[in-house]
Image (cartoon, rainbow, N blue to C red; front, top):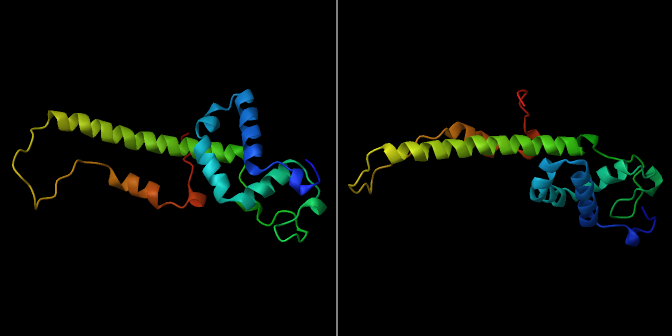
Length: 153
């Protein structure tokens, strides 16, 4: 990496290069979820910047924050740093959860085709298909940093 900050690659260039390397080593699951990963990186630039600096073994004296003050401790929150493996595991869990939910909807659509149609107007009546709402609610209620990875993967 160039010592001149203006000549250093920006985060998108680094992401693109990492994706090229991942493609070469056959890590297709992460490549398929590129948009998700890029969104996470864009939202947490400082953590990703620190991760790249750690991965590239930049000396602590070269690490500077946005204000130009040296960061003597290196990385402030090591817990905030996620490895590519962690990101891969999160994306796999997300896909499995989405697939389970998608299957529920498809199964219910098939079941509803065999049920008799209601032809009367139901303006004041609530009608619904049977869905496992608790799983959907759990998926949307979790904060990204607290996602649990099931042991049965």
